[in-house]
Amino acid sequence: MILKKVYSTLRSLRKAIRWIRCYIYSASFLYLLNSNKEVASPVETVFLHGIKSYLILPKKVDKHRSTVILMHGLSPSGIDDPRLLEISKVFALHGAICLLPTIETLKSCSLSIKSIEILENVVYDIANDAKLCPCGKVSIFAASISASICLVASSRPRINNLVSSICCIGAYADTRSMLQYVIESDELPDDYGRSVFFYNFVELSFGPQPELKEALWYRILDGHRSATGTKLELLNKFLRGKEIVAQQFNSLWNDRELRSQCTEQILGAIQEQLNVLSPLQVLDKLQCSYVVLIHGCKDPVIPSYHSVLLYQEMKKNPHVKSCLCLTPFLSHGDKQKLTLGAIRPLLSLLKTFAVFYFGSYPENTSEAY
Image 1 (cartoon, rainbow, N blue to C red):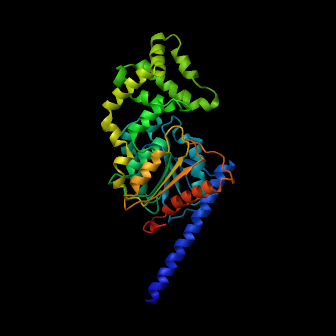
Image 2 (image 1 turned 135 degrees about the vertical axis):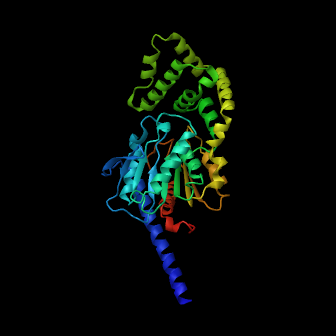
Image 3 (image 1 turned 90 degrees about the horizontal axis):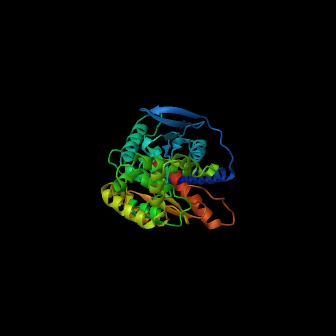
């Protein structure tokens, strides 16, 4: 009886110490990202079954901690996204092995079910590699559409017990409602999401139009590069001398009624695909112990109610401990300056990342927080 009490006390003490460590890691994480201080960590290029990936190793590997897989978004920059590299170096500073795999379907801005299958294989291969993943489990960090695809992939029976924790930034809950908002809203700061949607499916409404599809790809590239002042440069260059294509493109973009008709036609044709890509359909199949959902209060691309829906549905899953943080410190994938005056949202964000850190230790997955 005495030994049992001693064991219980030691277990509680160990849990408390780990929580303190995770809060320290979380505070360090927020400080480093907010201060713009560069974390010096060597980035190694490796190939995982032919998939180009970046590997960031900590100075000292914490073998009790899951390997962190950081997923890039629907973006031509792929794993070269500087924001993702910055975050991975901070995780590595705190003892985690970090891997950034290239998912070609996502890099080519394809809204494809194939992305789920590729992610499933990537997680399985990493978790079963003793050198890359000493503890046999992974944690996943992803944002926006990629975060939702990661949730769907993590529900697959082949890997649902290999994922320890997931951090989703600005995820969507239902694909159809997310796409309708991105396509029809007049309040979006840019039309990157709209470009991606029509690039993927324009032929379902207009028929085969290779030049129009190419114009949409250049619009994607311009949107991707807009921060450097090249907005519409590539598109305008491509459309010079192509009056018919330019007229088609402008009609699709500026004629709201035509755009709505095309959208309904496309969404009706891909309904089955939309269901497969919707996390709400599969949350009951998740086995990972911790899922944290972080969403900008005023996210202009994917409204924050999507994360609220995910959180409400996830609470029905007895295997998952979920945590929701709606924060003013994010827009859509871009951080805002942290301010000490906003103590309550800052503490909420601190706790949420601490939960993700805590969940990355598989030996604690049976313990509630």
